[in-house]
Image (cartoon, rainbow, N blue to C red; front, side, top):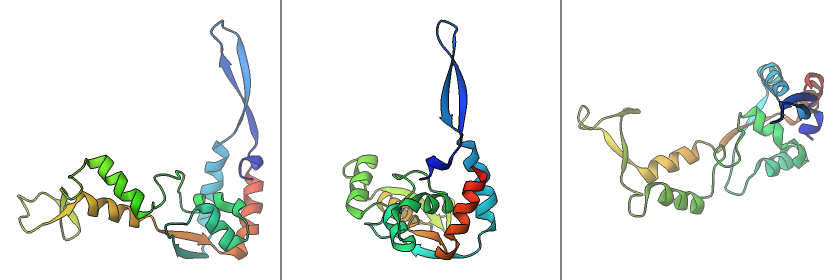
Length: 165
């Protein structure tokens, strides 16, 4: 549904032999105008904490009655990457931590914190150590809370989207 609404544009590619080949592409720059204009005007959001099984499609189905509005959830939350912008289940997170830091290094010190600030432990000897595991866990948890545009406004958002495209 999302890309169907975006207008086409022609882009010229110069071939190795010097000929120009025109290729039809979607004008993805239209997305920028839509986001800044429409999303700034929306003030009725609900907050939702994602669980491990949630995907944008599942959330869209739950709130809007259709999985086809998953892109609205993604745009409203400025989340564009299914892998890095959404929380992952704890078993996958633990595997990712081991892969990233190495076997046996999961609980090594990632950094030190003092009153919410990342500091060095020499200047701040009472700073608390944050392990690689705790750091990655907190990063993952911070991705759970998302904004849901009020279901009563979806038709207005779609109308504005079509107008911009």
